[in-house]
Length: 389
Image 1 (cartoon, rainbow, N blue to C red):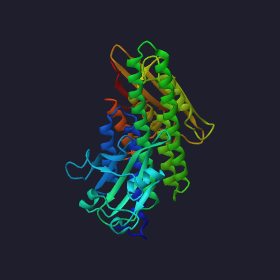
Image 2: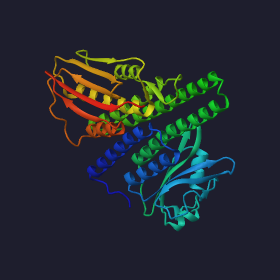
Image 3: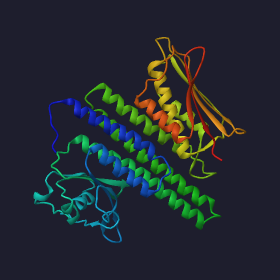
Image 4: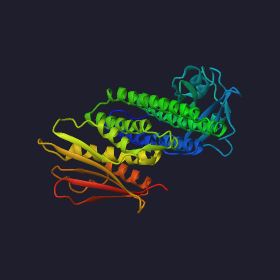
């Protein structure tokens, strides 16, 4: 149904839900998931956050000249994996493929410009919003939500769906490039230089796509109505940037999935702006510590949250030092990632805050434990997690 206007509270809640979903998907996109699981996650989250029952991803098939519904929620059995859509201009999804731009239809059955596909008619679809999924300059497919009741889509909806599609494009590119690299390595086992070129190209393209997402979020931040909303956009941008920095530390000697974690921590902390000269961020970490990409990103995002929290709350006008350390006890098979400041002390963390929930989620991803350790002055938080075998 159309949204009611006048009361800003529901709109603000909706935007906050969108921001939380984007932050969560930025983390999920860095994990090693199958394409099937990744696409299902996207459609499920989009449906949940927009409160629209039907959502789907359609993949362009050049050899067939159509779009295949490859993932979705809310559809009858047999629809996903079998239903196709045409690419002509009277097709809503086809128009998106032709223009590489979002398409909004608020009353599809009565719109003279578009026809209603049988599947949408069977499910009683009235309003449609879709956006292109782009990979490396080409349109891979379409992400779409289909409402059974009249729905007025606004700029916030378009921005949310577009950003989800952009993040999905980055994840699909990573999987596609890794698949190509694996195939190339199998065929050219003795041609190490060939695989290295492919991996470096992958690194470059993923970074470019992540930078596009950061630029898009920066543009949306300028339109945010309150300082709190602008700060939330900055937080999401910082998290995406933390993922991008991991690409610089990929080890081509041991495989695409490994990151030189000491160098990654130094680069990550060097890119966190203390906001004033009185605060210094120091890093102590052994060189040569390799972690799988998904675990390195999770650990890096924990550091990003903890350091940002110290910068916000730990210091008065006199400033101080934030110390980030990473140690490994190989005999015990355990790593310790600690963030300590010598500020005024922040007390126990505020339960329910987004930052704390993200730290808990990333720690769970690492199969680790997070705890605050007593220090003479300030706050020290340590995350312990098992080292990969």
